[in-house]
Amino acid sequence: MLTYDVQIWGIRKRANRAAAYQLRWRVGIQPFSKSYKIKAQADGRRSELLTALRNREQFDTETGLPASEAQAAQSPTWYAHARVYAAMKWPTASAKHRASIADSLATVRGRFILLFHPGMRL
Image 1 (cartoon, rainbow, N blue to C red):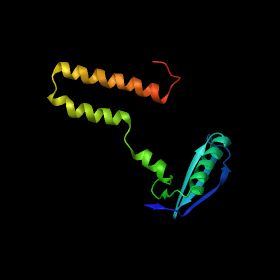
Image 2 (cartoon, rainbow, N blue to C red):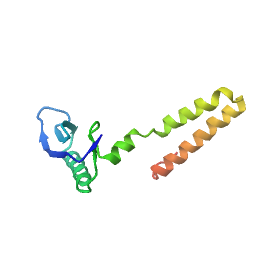
Image 3 (tube, helix red, strand yellow):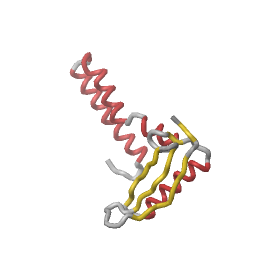
Image 4 (tube, rainbow, N blue to C red):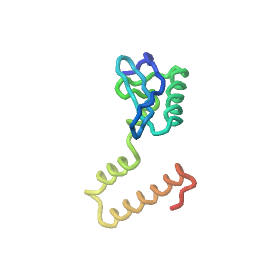
């Protein structure tokens, strides 16, 4: 369920913890928190949540995330999609067709890596 009832609290420092900085917020009646090693990371995430709130974006009561992030988190990954595709085609495919499926998925994977991580070399 989506709601505008959101409250974002400050960052609290917890001593003797690996991830010492904790960001806390509330969506509806449910509190959420996320811990970070560096205060700047927690502050950056807090800024992202405040920006979503200022842009009048609704928050998901189950995940505590803005609606746009919750939708992206629930969408399947490319890997999961490729596995479902291969499982669908595999039983009825001949040996050569199976090799072609594997080759095409490997080629597309390389293109996706270059598309989303331009500086990376294959």
